[in-house]
Image 1 (cartoon, rainbow, N blue to C red):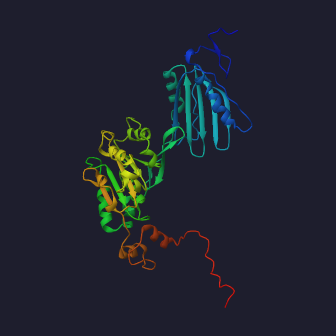
Image 2: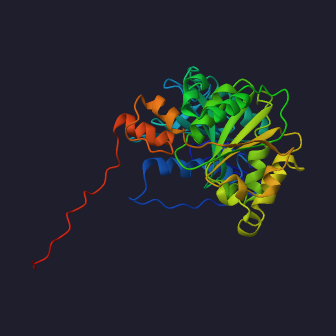
Length: 378
């Protein structure tokens, strides 16, 4: 018979002394035939933490997980194992701790959660289970690692991916000569002297603004970490989200400089931004040279379709703006040289997207237009 001060582990039969009896909560859950096996594992993994038997929890999200990574540790006893089409949930217990692992095979991601009777034990088990689990991709000449931020169901999340990014010398001809010379000066920066924190690329759609930023990430990869924010309107509308992105991880091996890429943010930096975007513009500027940006060495690259004359004067003032570059069409002669012929090129030149369409013959898939009806009358 149990003493009044003992509780029985619901996944086994060992008596466990409650770590914080006054803060323990009952765990209630229901399962029906609509639940997946992996959902049951998720529910069971909460038991020791919710009831207070193991009040210390630690979680780590892993990217690029090795196919042969065990994600377990010595002394672990497997109590639940659920395998589905693209996910794998596993629950193990040890002496004073519980290990919960969820893997997504196709995306090579994993979530490792440990609850334990002490913080030190939780961190030790988490470190041991995650050791050598991640396989860093080999750097490629035409790719670059870029982090992607978004605000998910459980708060800010960053996932890193290798994306295609051609070196600058391979794409220089995609830009009109004055633009190429200006971009070349930007590519040559090495982090030793950066005058200004805002980088603006503006111009009509299809001129290669994002392609230039990917090349910039390639050129700066040795001294600058590049992140893309997928929901910039949420970033500057939510101070907690902004703080998470601005402060970074704080790891010792984190690069000194970071570049945040925000695409198509016309509403943030337009002349009417103060009225239309509320505090978003103020927070953007504060991240560049205000108190929030002090000591963080954060650069912000923004692409926009707005004309330079319509940009907010606070954005483009000297000392704040590192570069403001209009990426326009290739003039007629340069466009014809790029394509190797002049057929299809208008007198005002062509955008990079138009040139690629002419080169490949690719056209949007559309419903063919029907011939107009002549009616029933002659």
